[in-house]
Image (spheres, helix red, strand yellow):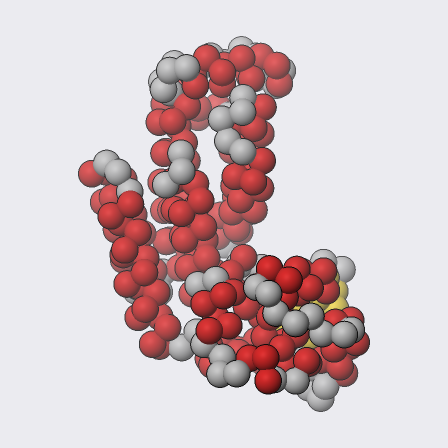
Length: 248
């Protein structure tokens, strides 16, 4: 679910107070990009991106939200974030049961855009994990599917030569030559993404998406106190399928 879709769920959005608009835009931004933290710059960018009237002073509206009792927004080293109770209230309002049913349908619609019987089966299993609320599992499976899809792309001619040249230029893995899928196993995933960029097999925008999603994947792969909400899994799956798997 993207910011535009969520705005459409709000009756008379532009008639809301500027404070309420800033709150919702910040929340919708976090939902689409699966983020915990954001900045006033992120909020301004969303207003401009969706051709909405920009509040006269976004920073002042943010300050009002921080001063509410209880606070809606809180500040930390990584930026602004929603206070836990406020966030849960927004999730219940805009990401409720009806929304979850719609998202399940939306995710299943992605299946027709994935080529290959094995890939389609893998994505279907990932979506099933999402539907039974195994959000970590769905994230891990879609990441594996994405990486496997990229491996297949790299192994094609002339991509494989470009990638092996990038390995030599990068220096860290000079002893490795890629000939088959198993050869990728000795390359750290973060380095693999960088090598794809060096080889010009992905755009810089795709690199940014992969770097961000790798961080989420790593958080999901280890026991910790991180709570994975459904909207995070939704954003993760949609972003990788639409912007990486479909475009490779």
